Figure 1 (cartoon, rainbow, N blue to C red):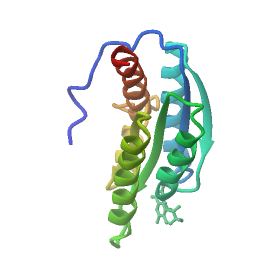
Figure 2: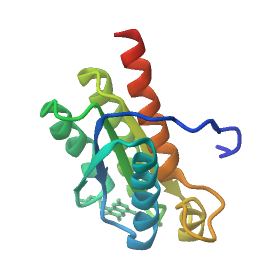
Figure 3: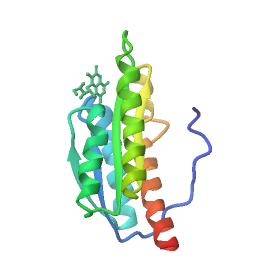
Length: 156
Ligand code: DLZ
């Protein structure tokens, strides 16, 4: 999937409380993703809380617990899974993606999807919003989550 063509308009001010659910594997990449998400929230004036889970497999449960508190208007799920030699990659990615979507639809809480699913660590670093990355998927996920807050408010 190409990263080109994403929205370029800044999200604007969003006075909301947001939870960032972040996996803990691949520290350098995760640091970049979290920094992109927190910067985007700060720029919009949204208050964020960082919640760490062990791996990307646990992202959906982390989101489910955060959504159930009803304390957050949006969630941002961040993780990186790097393909290895076994089908494990597919199980973790599928569980995370399907689980996160299920939590979002069941709870009505928007969840920005910042899960990198890469063949190599180099691909992940290039998407992590670091100084020499070409893309910033943490910022993109935060942008999507905050935009959905404004959509829900406009329709509510
Ligand atoms: C086990 C595992 C492996 C092999 N790779 C990753 C990865 O690249 N990224 C990630 O976020 N998590 C990984 N995990 C951990 C699983 O997501 C999960 O935390 C464990 O299977 C324990 O439930």
